[in-house]
Length: 321
Image (cartoon, rainbow, N blue to C red):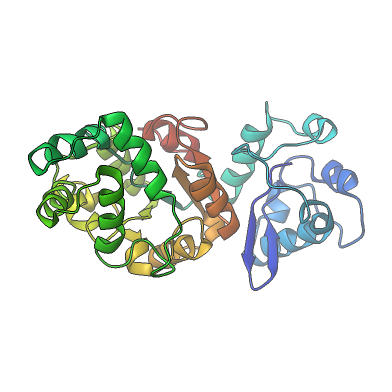
């Protein structure tokens, strides 16, 4: 069974499909509690009934799901017995059909999007840029050496503050650049730092993104970027002429929380005026994007595995582009 949890003050709410074979599902789950109707119209007719349904199902499942190891897959696994009880041609289709019964044909009310690796990509490899700009400042490492040293520096614990991306994140990036290239010249750092604020350094990952986001907004879907980034993200999105695609930006440097901390996802939902269980997050990192979003109570789709384009994202939500 596919499960989505909301963890707020110790309370778990499970989004489980009541519209399809609820009686069979309840039998498979076992345990007591109020009887759940097998009729989608009966169980979803009012917000109060839907909320009670979620709580009833949660009570049955809490002891089973609560202690399970988090799955590496971006779609929760299901037992063979439970899979057979689902109708609709597969667990994801079954779950999406259930959610559409809640939201008038749509699976979610809001879409959260990761920035680097999902929405935007570097135009050139970072190691190549570090070396090309650094040549006039005496950088002599090869691109492979720079990449290896960059990865080491980026992954080091950051002792100065609990967040790497505080404000403009200059101290963190100075540490990374100096360790990656061996160059401590402040002029080199400033040139490199400013380069990554320009549209020359980045491009939109999906050429159809603008058209898709416009269609989603026309359908009433609210959109937000959720990113571990410093204060350069807003001017960067402005330079790429895509900031207006979104209703809100949840940037770690501004909300003082970094993925996978669920706080940054809660902030994004707060900015959009939706509950976490009403949103789906799309990103390319299992730990930061998938696990982080699910810990916040959102759905999550892995970019490059669950979905490969924003048009596919829209179609899964239920919006035709």
